[in-house]
Image (cartoon, rainbow, N blue to C red; front, side, top):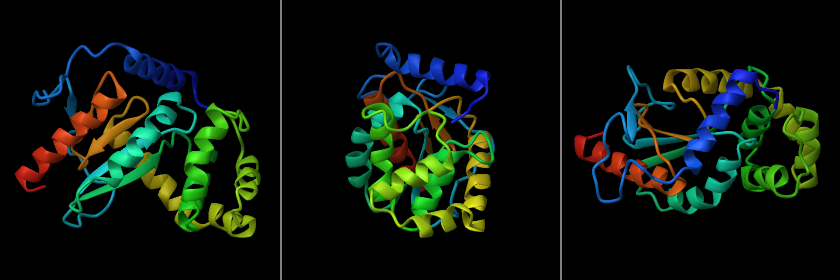
Length: 215
């Protein structure tokens, strides 16, 4: 994935912050605005309101901390109550981002169970995918996982995928996210943390606050 130098610098700085010892929020304390989260001006949800609290993880397959978060956030999001809707959202800096295109195409054909964790593994552990992989390289890799190549290619070129790419980029810009992983609660709050576990803990507190406020 080709990213401008400025964006790569932001991602590196964000990853460094997550690697530092926890110095702000502490479990058991209410999250503090400006420290543990940022309120998003005129924040809007990714999906239309459906009565549930929305949690969105903005992630990048190229991000090592996103790869580390994945085995933590998977059981966390599966355990969320029925009144919470969780969505993964690939970061889209460029309108033709290959990894985001592949993600949305796999989502469209119902292949994410085969591809999502496998893509992280291929990039950060097995080293089977380069950071600047093309859609053709990703399609080839997904085909090795058993994904129907013809359906995947069609989904990559579909108007639905194009719209999702545009919507994802708009949401990214509105959220003010400076790196990945970033959690957005109900379009209103951008979680800040210095560890991956604290990221999930603060998100849980904000979910509870939204529930109490009536979403």
